[in-house]
Image (cartoon, rainbow, N blue to C red; front, side):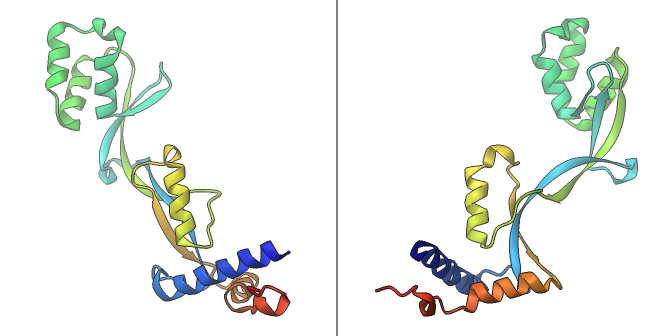
Length: 179
């Protein structure tokens, strides 16, 4: 039991420090999640980039990914040397779209995408420090843009009570002294 009390006392100190310095403009009770970003299909006039869907491959790619994949693949021989050189020179999404519309022989669909922020499911941290550590240790699961995101357990009396206990309970009264 002493080990658990020691843990709770250390957590209490972190929560108090955080409440004073690192609360990310969130009211108490606050917690942190991982926020990351993903590309989502949107209406054409709301997109940030163009993507291509190849139904035969059951795959979608950004235009830059499509270009890179095609230039790396062995099946690029279905295009002429001049067509490949033209693709190599394509720099913008629109250049690649023009190339696809002129030369892609397989069925395809072009669509617009926008990058949206998402709170990563199954992430919940009592401290910002713990959330940062999780992101650092699990970078392979996230994009380079992943970061901590503070939230408030708004109108949640049980969470508010637990936070109050964690932040204010006198653990020394239950045998958690440093003696």
